[in-house]
Length: 404
Image 1 (cartoon, rainbow, N blue to C red):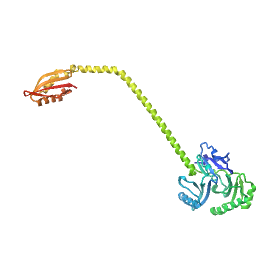
Image 2: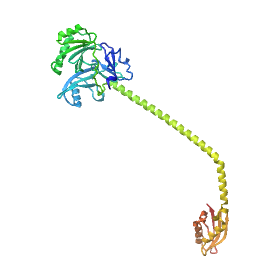
Image 3: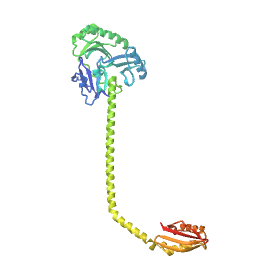
Image 4: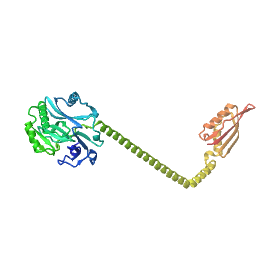
């Protein structure tokens, strides 16, 4: 995500908020609550006040990022902060500078419990509000956020550390005391002489307060109405920082969206299948109707063809030479053995042949009929098995053949 295309929401000195779009240097209209902001499809990023997001600066031994993150977790847990890693992480660290031996990091930790009025499901990302601004180099910054007085320090223009030191109106002496304590701590962490001045941010400060603080702390103090957004901020590789309640709500919304999409796709698929089934049934009905019409149109010619075929079949014995009675008798005579078979009666009627005769024994009669069944011409007839009867040592038989 790029902040250049995002809508930024930052806390005002009072309980309202102000909107910056596309990192414009001009402050937008104030809104009473983040829910009033219309991002118009752009990512919406909330800059949290220090009361909802604590920022801690650390100077650590240099290491690769995985080891460095474990060192950060250990250091913050020693300070009593409860951290959660992985996808449910409640912190995000930023590498400000790195040398051969040390790494300077700034860590944003979400408040626990997180304010319910800021846990909004439409938020793309959360971060510390001062991280979105350009902080003056080497200056302690005193500003007001949501009714609290906050002290912060930048490192090369980026937020290093911030904390609340007053929740109501504060005197110049209290601010001066806090500045001197912070200067001693930061000189020990970042090097002697790192703090070179102080900046009061907001319309409630006047030049007299700045001069008073300068005389108390010995540091040059300047007063500015607001800090410009950080135009060099690159958030492309930032892991998202979301409270657990917001992350869970967004995950549920994504799951519901998937179920809705799957339901719509399933419904569309069912409708498509019903339409295809209806179209196929319509096609089948049309095809059946067309076939019926074709059958009706060809019924009379087909009947005529069948009638003609039957007539030709009936004429087959008269016009087909192989069915002539004399031809058949000749073929039967050729099958007769030299002796042992006597034909007593031979009749050809339409498609049937009836042969009666005598054989010297039953076996000769049966063999004769089998020869009829194997004959190239006579095998076109289906022959009944003979049932020879023996009389006066002669086997009388009858063979009947029916054209196939």
